[in-house]
Length: 223
Length: 46
Image (tube, rainbow over all chains, first blue to last red; front, side):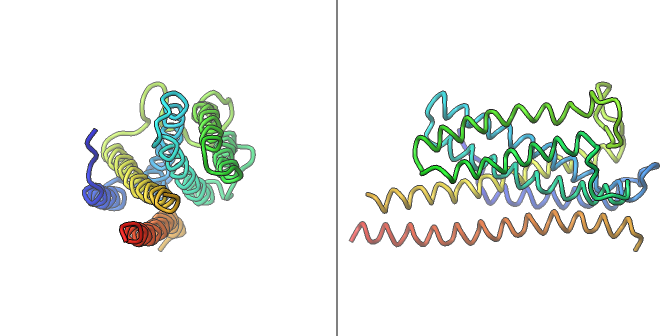
């Protein structure tokens, strides 16, 4: 499969992020309930979905590694999980800032969605402890792949738990009846979501290129 | 600037600060790795 050149991806990321910021700050109207602070939503939610996507991609590559023994799949799974953890940290940070404005607290342990996302984040953070506690080789790749596959089960749990809960204060904007917004808010959200996904994919490709170079160096050293 | 505007600005600055830091770290690492590959390939080819 032909891959999009990295400079083109980087340019697309820059253009999309700029367009998203213009829409978020200059076009989308203030939310009737939360006012200006609702503008965190556009990137906070986009980053959250992108981190789920990264964990999903990490699990898919892990499955490919275990199933097809694709030599690149282990590295691709590792890089996707790494991206997911970085974006997960951003979700927690932006979420905390939003919580401080809306609820007056940086964190609420009583909120299932927050705690479940933290569990998901910590589970994947521990992936690196496991990976780097084993010497490079097939054993490390297999253990990492199984761990990444187990972790992906937490993604739907994290996403659905709040929708099944009886009591919550975290807003739910995507319900079974569709999104709870429209007009310019929807346009700004869709552009932000696409921008964050393209940015994540660009960062994934850059990091993967680095990991492949690293592997090439090891080959050359031991050749 | 209102309190809400300050917090929203902080949230977006956190996002872009972390992404920028990540890009700089990866770019420096890739540059170093490229130099290492060139050096090792030269060494191997005599």
